[in-house]
Length: 361
Image (cartoon, rainbow, N blue to C red):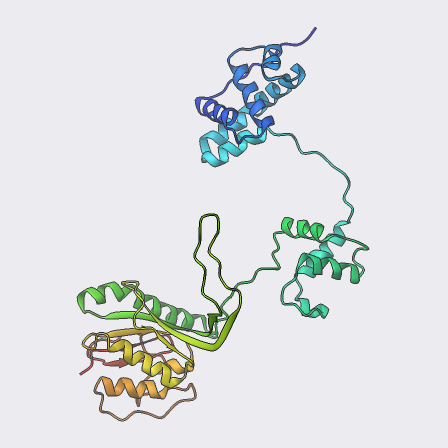
């Protein structure tokens, strides 16, 4: 004698989600069928009727009813604590097939570990003339070292994805030269305070705070033929051949308050003279205003020529000090690390992080 069908309950939110899954054209067929089973069972239909309606075996209908009843207490907890996306994943997990054991792995955990360790090594260590590993190169090197007798590039890729390793990607990181944590913190706070004060100083004092950086080695390329405009059924066509006209350097100013690019400079080099000229043409856009320049530690950003130009522009008549080993000039008696935020009464302050030009005389 067959047993009675499992009695199940669903909440309004569960019912709405199940109806959405069952009706959505993008839902997998099995997922839509199982959502329909739960909805019909909640309405009181028997397993046989549900099986006939959705063209499924009655035994399978009973299995998914019992699965829902067993998982329902956990679903209630997830429904009350998790966002909609997490709740939907939990419902789909209940209606999905249980994990299967599958075929035994072809490679041992030790072999997989060696492959992952190989992917973390630089390719030049293996004598390969590449900068980043590819799946094919890794598979070839694993066979060459005797880690495995044979493995496909696709299988190597699967292992790397499971371990969340991406040898084809790279990003920059900053190696701080300042080893004293307190001094480093002080410098960071100086620069951050400079940015934080920028809106107020711009509104109350008319001071422009700009961040400067260079992009070097920009290729000046010219296509050998004009680009063909798109036509119906044809995309824009660009000539693949080009002429090289050397490289150029972009020195740009980002106004941290307005977000504008102020007086950029394009030229073949980024020498001390180039940077002094760039600062001069930037100040010339508003010569009556005060300026704050935030720069990095490049030697041309704190050069003797720049200090002399600032002193001349601001009308500073006192004698300048000698050029230091850091490549910058200094005023007699100044401290090695001066604040980035000078007051109008202090016409010049320089540091490796920022310097201020007060309103010129």
